[in-house]
Structure formats: structure tokens, C-alpha cells
Length: 288
Image (cartoon, rainbow, N blue to C red; front, top):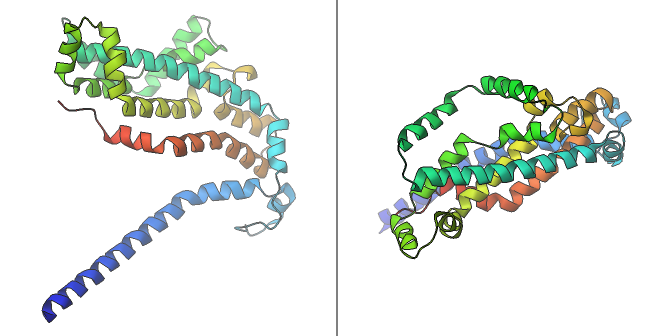
């Protein structure tokens, strides 16, 4: 009996020590990851004089100010950049989702000659370096005279091989019996896709939508190449405009305020839809 109690005590101590070590490293990693965000917010709340007057940076401020945020929205047309980015993200994501869903359904359910070969070639496109795609897209959009237009911004981003592959794998795992039963009832392929496959794959679709919106929000290289008109700047490219022609390179607090304002929508999206993102990433579909 005593041996059993001692063994149980040792096991509890071992488990406790293991948990302490795990939580310690998790806390350390969390601090390491979150510190840049904390420093960004802290810097945005300091006045220009206070920030530049600190020989040794302080990790707190007794006199926070929102003046930097006011400057971020008044010195440069930051709201215009927000509006452009929202429009770009919504239209691009909507078209991409439509194209990806239809393509994934075709590869998963429809039978046509050479389907496997076409899909293999399609997947091979993922092996092409992004730099080559950017060059090709830039030449094409320029030849079509679509520079400095929303059409030129949107067109190269309306397809995604990875998202089509992800949806195709989800659709392919939906039991065939559902499809055959729907065909017996006279249901069209499009109706079956909308009424059955899309609701079953909703977690993955929601994840794709959120990831695509984040991708559009953070897009930098392509908008920078295809637009040199301020009327079409997105928030990511607007930061460079702010730095060069807005506050100036030395006004770090105002720059940090602009970055915080730009980051807030993405943080809100992640916090609201974090469960759907985790479910969509971990769930690969309904197995038959």
C-alpha cells in the first residue's frame, strides 16, 4: 500500500514538473511572439518628443496619446487605402471562391477524358516560382493596358492551385452515395454542389475565405508593381507612401500608429473566426 502511494506521489510530482516546464516554454514563446506587437502599440501611444527623448527605450509610458492616430488618418488618405483594400479583398475573394469551387467540383465528381492528366499538370503549376508568375502577369496586364486599374489588381489573384486542390480533396471524400441518390432524384450537378457539397465542406471554405482575405490584405509586391497611382494604393503599399511622403522617416510613433490601424482588421477577423480556421485546417472532409 505504501509503495502504491509513493508511486502515485512520484507520478503526480513528475506530471506537475512536466506541466510547469511546458507552460514555462509556452509563456516564453508567447512573450517572444507578442512582444513586437506590444512594442508597436506602445510606440504608437508615445508622443514624437517623448519617443525621441528616450535615450534608453522604456517599456511603458505614463503619458499615452492618441495624436499619432489622428495624424495617421489626416496627414495621408489612409481611409482611402482602407477602402481600396476592402474592395480588392472582397471582389478577389468572391471570384476566387467561385472559380475554385467549380474547378474542385469538376476534378472531384465529373468524369471526362484526361482528367487525371489535367489535374497532374494543374498541380505542377505549384512548382513554378512566384517570381516567374509575377513577371508573366506583369507583362500580360501591361499589354492589356490594365495598369492602374482594379481589374489589373484583381485578375492575377482570382485563381489558386492550392485552394482548388484543398477543396477537391474535401469534395472527393464526400460519400458517392449522396451524389448517386441526388442524380436519381433528378438533381443537377450545380444544385448538388450548392445544396450538398458546399454545406458539408463549409469549415474548409470558411478557412479559405479568411486566408484569402488575409493574403489580399497583406499583398505588397503585385500592387506595388502594377500601380503607381495613389488612387489605387492598398494599405500595404500605402505604408511606403506614408513613410516617404507622409510623416517622414523619423516620425516612428506616427508610423506605428498607422501600422496598428492597418493590423486591427486582420486581428479582429482572426479572433472572430479562429475556431472556424482551426476546424477547417484540421478537418479534411467527410469520409465515406
